[in-house]
Image (cartoon, rainbow, N blue to C red; front, side, top):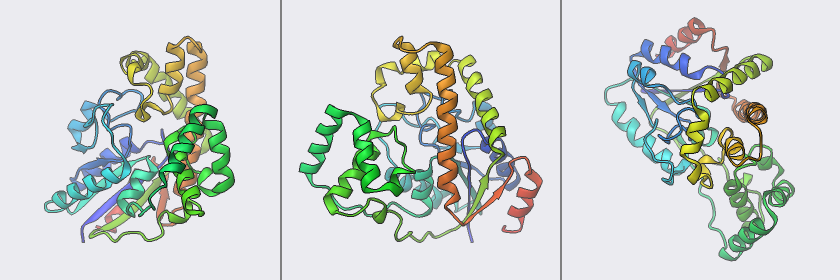
Length: 298
């Protein structure tokens, strides 16, 4: 049976390096599952695979969109399934890898059939957000759906508002509509999780942030500054850098905040992935052990 190897883990853990080795071992390709790496204007701040890495192994969904193009997990699910239908005609195994939890779940389990939202509720929530800001909206979500509040990106106002829309429109939690009936896929899914000791992971993140800044992150943020209100840039690295460009923060403090906020995001990723009992966990340094495990399944 055709197999999709899904390799997940927190940011900075070492997914890219390991996936290159596994892809070369399997003579296959890599499908990117990092929602921000899809945008071609921001390769530095998203740690997208380099041109050299993409020459080593064919990658899909890297730098294929412009920053102002709308895209979501449902569109990603449809695009990846169409691609897999083609790839599996001549590949027995394909790798899907990244850290965007909802994108990975979309491919593995499918997007849920979420109820429609009452327009009156939608408009009222948008007005409340415009007047009171994200903090009050977030508190309301914490009260109505604490389970989703604990895992949602609390800087992503669209996700928070959407979850509240569902809660208020249906009288039920947004969580109750999520992933109740995973869709069947015409291929086998094997999930491999990568993790490290927490301090080691933080140290790797801090080094990578410094490398990003030295590698041109400031200029990259300047280049997309005019798009800063877009959801695609409402993410760690760019939010802090935009405040630096606005003169609100010093560069030293900006770098420090990027590191700290990336640590927080990394913890959120780990919490999300740990809920999935189908993931087999490894240290990314144990390449031989991982490949031996894969060999038993191919």
